Image 1 (cartoon, rainbow, N blue to C red):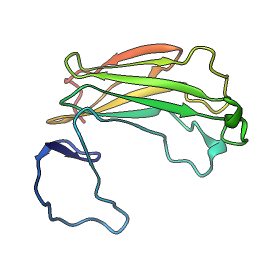
Image 2: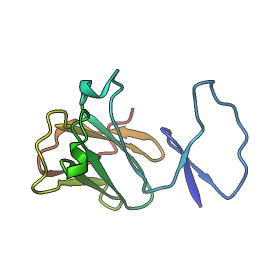
Image 3: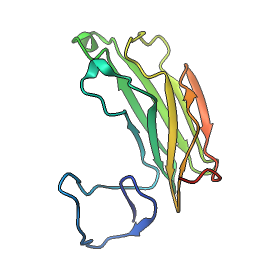
Image 4: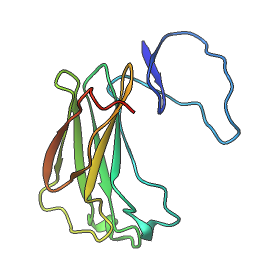
Amino acid sequence: GEWYSFNASGVQQGPKNISGTAEMGEIPVFVRPGAVVPLAPVVQYSGALPGGALEVQVYAGADGSFEFVEDDGETTAYEQGKIRTTTFKWSDASSTLSWSVESGASSLPNAFTEVYVTKFADSTVKSATKALGSSGSIVVSDLVVV
């Protein structure tokens, strides 16, 4: 199959053994085309979330989806269902990430309110930041290469 190095463009063909070097704090990770990977900004403790926009990385080559679950980050209220679930869906053909927030989801003080997409393919492309709201979509243009 095909594999991307995490956080990088360019596809490796497998199966095969890959040798290489990694920095001391780096963990070699590979992801399949179609992977949808939400990443929060680095914060010192959960109370500092959201700390910025939610980055959703997508790896081109297939459709994919991911359910992103948030809680208040402080209590065990998630055990009683006090969570917010956002379903992200990647359409490779239209280069579009769409999402919907579960209706009836709890209002959470630390929930993400903004999102942007980083698409990995032959090159890396970042979208503009958009309000998360209850649903929406971002079409990732291949014109803004980073």
